Length: 202
Image (cartoon, rainbow, N blue to C red; front, side):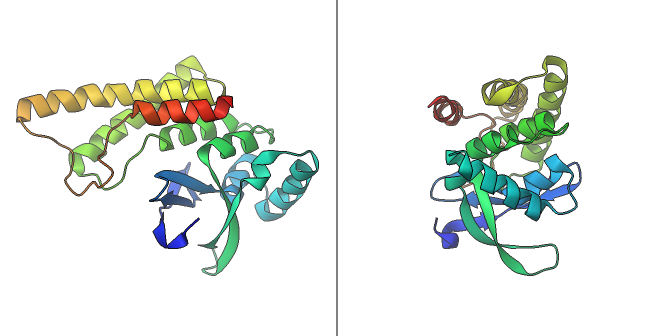
């Protein structure tokens, strides 16, 4: 992982900061494992909790642990420390190892994160909020289980925003996608979802 080609983007889950990194080369997110563990385990010391869990997973031959990468991230005390980060697929597998009432909400949050794009203008921000709210309500209604089902729900929520976007663009006669968006923003990109699903099945 080339740290010079990564961008730290702090995300929030229920007012908890989740340190999230965007890899420009791989065009995907990496998430701080300790931050996710902290939300799941509700532990006073998520670093110790993860250290113990990581040791157990290694002893069990869990490949997810070996796929974690170490990056220097800014901690709450303002100091930079080496922190394990993992992509969305790997994070789903780690979540399965931690019994928690927050497991499904975190999975939904991660599934939606996999569909996000950066550098959006006001209309895009509103449409993103629509996508998030639609995804949240659909998830509450359908109660998805696992990566594939959560991605399906996220795709449905994204579709609602996509329909709204296309209607706005039709009436405006112009694109509402910001030119500064170097990732060519879309709410749902099928090939990314398929790629993520295929990895999970392998």
